[in-house]
Length: 306
Image 1 (cartoon, rainbow, N blue to C red):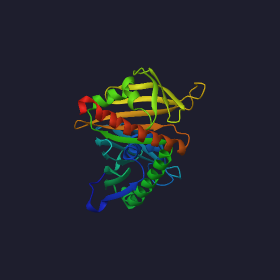
Image 2: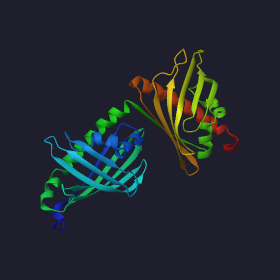
Image 3: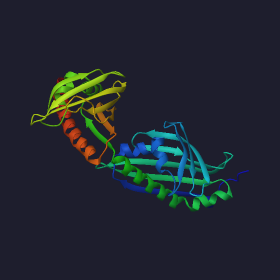
Image 4: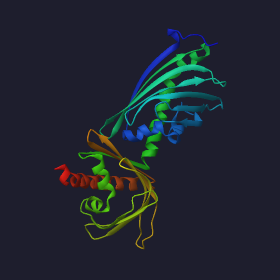
């Protein structure tokens, strides 16, 4: 039977890092099992089992495999989730019969700092059996190596994904409507100096959209896609592809746009995946930055916002 923990058989750590990536992306690294499985655990460990139900009360279950093939199962429950700011969860090391060896509680905070993320991990663990004391001895090194893995995974993911966040001084319903109504989108979509010459949008799951812009030098640029998910006024998921000169779609990417109410204003977060090169991602970052500037000007000029 497990013996009660003593003061000598517990440990607490606080670790902080500045990660060169938007906090929405860093937060997703902790709550998407496909990402978490790639970096969780000390150097050289893998995660053949990584299951997450990222909601308050939801369970997490991870089996870490050491380089020598030994499996180390752990389980926990999410106590608090405030996206993309804070996570609180229990994390318990188990034996192979499911008995708790080490009882832990971890708080992770994500603070935005000029487009980067200040990550702070505060974790406390109690050894419930004498054999678990060795886990406490390696706790600091294990967490530091785990965060090294997180940084490496963020760098790799950030090179192929784009996250842009902007807060608009307009209600969420107004922002969502301006994004999904073709007549309104034609006024702001595209970088500065571009004009929209056609815009068709069937905003429903399975519905298609197609729009063409003309650049200042007269070049025609057309894009098309299909809406995969529409949750009014909270979320859009759609595919995105540029057309070639013959009207054929090229490489397909995916875009998710979320609209969060912030005391009557709207925090818009755009997440685009599927870039083939870093240069393509950076081109889109510049394009979206310019387009969202135009979007902000359009929203400010609406009668309801004057």
